Image (tube, rainbow, N blue to C red; front, side):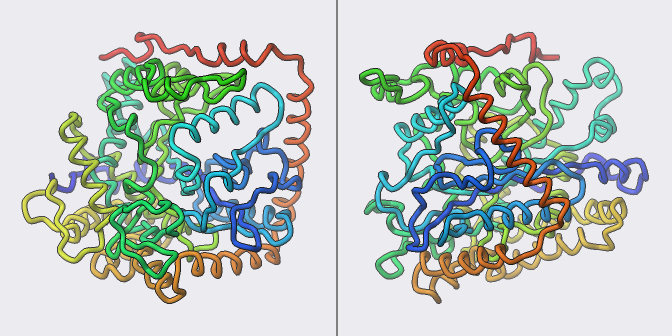
Length: 532
C-alpha cells in the first residue's frame, strides 16, 4: 500500500473548486465526565441549570449520568465551531454542583467498581426509558467500565456540488444520491487504510489508571501503584483496551457499497446472539436490554468512522440512511487532548479538514475481508506502539516505517492545504497546520501522547496529572466571559428543553412493551440501496 494519489490535481487552482472547499461543514461532539472534589466520577444527577439531557440540542449525556456530551451545530467556520464548544463548557461549568469539574481526558479517573458508575437517566416517558434501557444493555454486554471512555467525534460533510465535480456526469444524472453515497463510502475506506495517522498525530492516551483493568494483565508497564503505561503508545482508547467486542469482531460489515453496508448492518440488527440470549431481555418483569441481537440499535456498532444521516423525529438511523443516503461521516478516533481546554483546537480542526478532504478526493479501491483484518491489526499496532522508533507498517510495503509513510502521505496534501488557504483566506493557516503534523512525525516527543506520558511521569500518576490540569481548566471556564447573545441563546435552550421534556412526560402514551416492540422495526428494503 502507498499513499493514495488525489483524483483532482487539475482542480486545485480552479476557483469553483476552491469555492466548494469553503462550504465544507463540520460539527463536533465532545464527551466529558463530571468528577467530584474527591476525584471520583459524580453520582449526582445531570445539573438542572443546563437543562434536560433528553431534549437539549447541545448538551446531553452519553452512557452515564456523569458523562456530559457537548454538541456543536454544523458550520463552515472552524473558529466559530471551537468557540461554540468553548461556550458550552463555560455555560456548563457555571452550573456544575459545588466541587465538580470536567475530567478533560479520554480515559477515566480512578474507578471504584461498576457500582460507582451511574447509568444515564432521562425521565419516565417511553422515549426516555428506551434510552436508559439501551445503556443498561450496554452495561450487561460489555460492562460499565468500558463505557466510561470519552472522546471527540468529528462530523464532516462535503457540499453536493463538490461531489458532483468528482463523479461522472452520467452517474450524477442517473442517481445523484447514489453518486454521493459512493463518494462518502470511498472516503470511509481511505480512513480505514490511513486512519492510523490520526492515532499517531492526535492520540493522547498512553496511560490509564490501574483501576480501569481491575487487576487484569493487559501487557502494560506499571508506573507506581496506580498507573499503567504503554511506553510507545499513542491511543489506548483505540486499542484492544478501548471499545472492543468479541461479538462485533465477527460482524461482516463493509463499506464497498451502500448495499454491502446496509445489508451487513441489517444482519447485525436482526441476528440473535447466544451470548446475549444468556443475559436475557427481562428478569422478573424488569428489562435488561432492548433485545438479544448482535446490535441492540445502530449506534452500538463500534469503529473509527461511521456514515451518518440526520434522522427525522421517530425515524431509525438505518431508515434515514436507506431513504435519503449519507449526509456526513463521523470520525470517532479522536482522543481528547488534556492540554487543550476543550480537548481540540482550531489548528487540529483545520488539519482534519485537509486530511479528510484528501481522503475523499483520492482513489479508494474496495476492501475485502482479508485486507480489513490487516487494517485492523495496523490500527492496533499504532495504538500500542506508534511512537517506537523505526516501527514498520508492513501494509505500506516491506521495510516502510510509520515515519516514512506519514511524511509521504502529508506531503501529498500540501497543494490541497494551499487550496484551503486560498479558498478561506486563512493566510497559510492550513499549511501551518500541516507543517505542525510533519514536525510530529520527525520528532515523536511533540505528539500529544508523548507529552501526556511525560506529564504523567512528572506528576507520578495518570490520576494526579489529569486532576491537576482539569481542575484548573474548569475553574478558568467559570470566570471566562461569554458573548451575551450566545448566553441568552443557551438560557433559552435550557427553558425549551425543560418545556419539551415536560410535554413528553405528560403525553398519553402506549405501554412501554408496545413502544419497545414498535421501535424494534425499521424500514430499509433492498430497493433503497440497489446496485448500479
